[in-house]
Amino acid sequence: MTKRSSIRTLTAVALLAGGSTAASADPVADFYRGKTVTILTGSAAGGSYSLVARQIAGGIAKRIPGKPTVITQDKPGASHTLATSHFYNVSPRNGTTFLVVQPYTILAKLLKPKRANYDPTKFSFVGRLAPINQVGFVRADSGVKTVEDLKTKKIAFGAGGSSGPAALVPWMLNNLVGTKNTVTRGYKNSTKYFMAMVQNEVQGIGSYDYGRLMIGKQDVKTNILYYIGLKRWSKLPDVPSVMELMTTPEGRDVMEILASIPTIGYNLIGSPDMPKDRLAAVREAFAEMTKDPTFSVRIRKLELEIDPLTGPELEALAKRALGKPSAIVARLRKATAPPK
Image 1: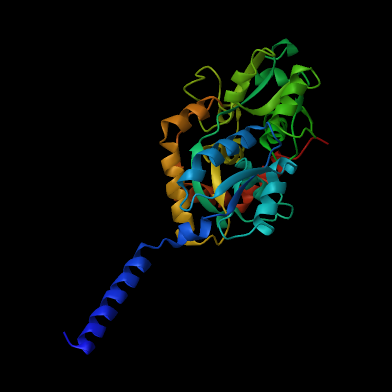
Image 2 (image 1 turned 45 degrees about the vertical axis):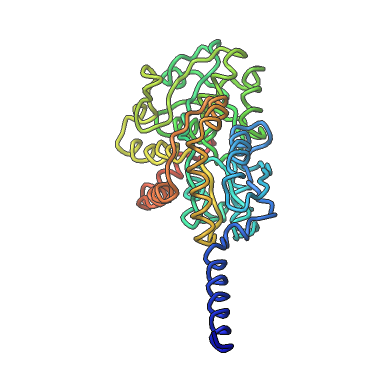
């Protein structure tokens, strides 16, 4: 072999080796390797979204290429809109920060667009873990057994802020069906206002996770008044949905917006403008996590059953909720106004 041909052969081998290395390189893994990923939550420690975020952090870390460290950070306030606004306006948009908040932050964008300074349609939805099965209830010793009773008996409901369903649903019932509810706000999270009900500071909760209620049922006896959904839940066949409580077409149009939100459920959200390859990798990691039997056992301890949706499916739900006609949105704002 001549010297020139030997050089050509060695060059070709080097090029092939270099090409093989380039082909096997994973830019997503290279990015995440050695990094810390933060999941922001909208509730204080002990709240349901904080607990779910911790389970997601533990389950997804080993499945993201590069195996970054995944931590959670609680940022409670304003019915999760504080965390959502911070995530949208301050957090990096490179795939190192994610969000776990109640889906009613989408509704907050309709109700208070200036205060909710974020656009949910621009989020990079990763996936849904489970839908939210929420109910409204009162203490069994309150003298109230149905929503009809609330038209003659004034009950104080506990809530965090004015943008979450724990406040919105009692106010909507006041404005749409004539109940006399009051709402005591300012509790840091759902655990706090549940304990306030146990101690009889308030007598009811307008929206609360059914699984969490079952965990705390030994602390207080309750009467469940309604289920927040478009129709009755098979697990509570004798409990009416909030849609059934509406007696007018206008009421049904307005309540339909709120009743559809729980479908979005407990989910993981990526930042706007998140690089597509990193989003695809985290979506795949999330999907793998939901199929893990060990992870399912941990989630069931929170009284949740995994029922996943994909990121594109969640994005479509968010856009549908925000795309209602302006006349219906105006009615919604009026119906959710607190009593004067």
